[in-house]
Image 1: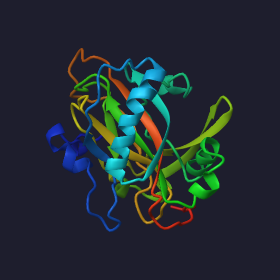
Image 2: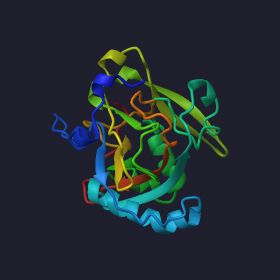
Image 3: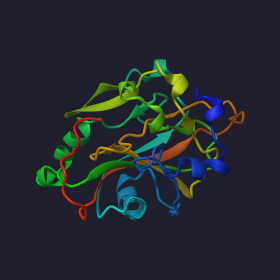
Image 4: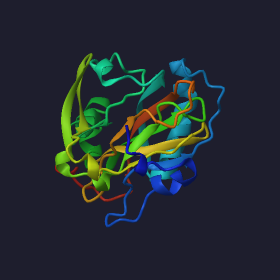
Length: 256
């Protein structure tokens, strides 16, 4: 459960989740954005999602990040009640359920490796371009009351809090970060209560550039204020590489 004293209400969510001034002037928890999409999309039809939803996400990513190019490569539908840790023995088995483990989808290692898997002919050039992996999380039905998404403020984390772990998929191996619980009393959590279908979280899973927040740990969680009988959360998350081709080339950072 997230510390209740660090939970923000929906009315206060936008300032808390938006980019905040810091010494690096970068986002520390992601952004809550207005995002109006045709709700007539058949979300269970993968071709339709790619044809109708991906272009809207492309526009959102470029507007929010200022990136000149995007490559949307993955989307996941979440439908159902939050699973317990005991039920999460298999990442693939839990793929369509809200995940209750604090995690980051990419690491210093996998952020670059996946680029080479997805765009092998261009990766050598693109990895010299400032780039990031960004996730867009949006409810399919709202407002969300069950299993909301919680964001961990990167500025409250130490490098030693990140723990890499391995995920085995058919044909490839992935690497994620978990967050060690040792310093949990120093961690600051935020979430927006009652996000609706015309809103979306936009946050970084990886950033190739140093000197800024490079990862955004997040999790689904059980909110003690959730109304009894609240419908299970239904949401879609999309991950994309974004590139700033108008910025000077720079090698991707290999350390925090």
